[in-house]
Length: 195
Image (cartoon, rainbow, N blue to C red):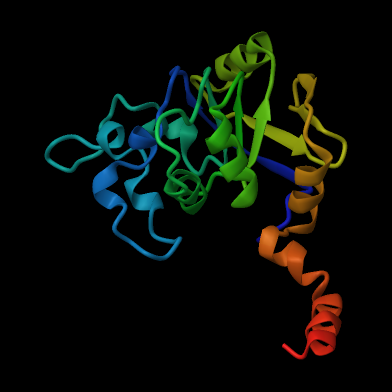
């Protein structure tokens, strides 16, 4: 995975509560076996009209959200089923960071496992970010090392993160990468056990 140390990016504002995983990536697109290619189906039922054209009313189709790599949403983001395809789709679309007041637990952990940084902020701070990015291009910088978010206009917020997940993201490791850090010990054990 690509490490996240300090990320500056445009924001996409999705001011909706209870965004569930079936809206993030609808079930009809779960037939793929690889982790890539899901971004084109992200928020499919919201992004596209019945005729396949972009829905001009959908927040992430607005010009200010173009090339957004930081998603800002409302309470309980990622609720619903535990499908790991949801973070795959968000990442494949281009999101590296998701900021919300709260997340569904399984989705929250799946983000870390797939190289996305989910950040919980106070509701007031999230709504301030939403307001700033609602009608114009709005960039923020997320500094994982120092655990803070800033913009060019003086906004600043700190966030908490479990030290385990922080290290994994800073180093660009998934759980397999972490296991491989002990490859020499695994080899020694297998040799000793004649495996």
